[in-house]
Image 1 (tube, rainbow, N blue to C red):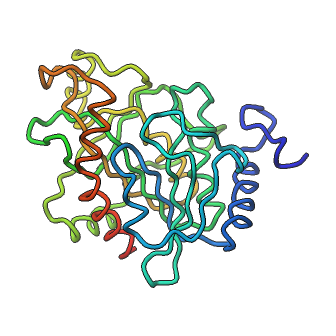
Image 2: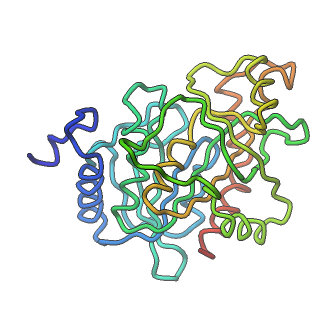
Length: 277
């Protein structure tokens, strides 16, 4: 079976084999067989790659096994191999992710993380745009993810593989981020299935069970990253106050606008963190 014929949705296909196929294509297209850190860029984080260093190669998602074109406005349909300053290290930057609500299955959602591991990465940085439950976090505020609550009712781990999620979001990396920006707050991210926004009642439920941030990504990827042995740094960009926290209606245009306004700050934050990894 050739790599082009492997189908993540086929139960007989090993998803780690598809990740290995993808890593091989990335190595061929970028000219390097090893990347050091991977970044998944959510809404508001698109400038990060430009600020980390020079983009040395760009690969169209559609050319890589298991990947797809961007399904969400404001996301890029390609991945980049970026020089991390003058360190000689490389960052593999994914300009988009597969969201659970796209209906492609959990394997597709976490394929980028598994590919990062297969490509040699030891750390993955997961970013997103999200709704905030703390009124003090104005749109444009970056918040470290301390922990998460997965409300998708799914897991990327298959079979009787019991993975410890204690300190899933690596404390050492959160400390490093606070060295770069001592004003960073942190909170618990709650992943809903989407694609509809949460109701005010659901937002209050998230608050009652310990959530600070609500969104539609990240937690499934983080679980897969832990299974793969990757260190994980999660950072959310509060693009709006969650439903019921503010009296304003929610819209994706608002998310994009807040992300664009905060892009430089978020990009410089992540670039500084990645430079120290």
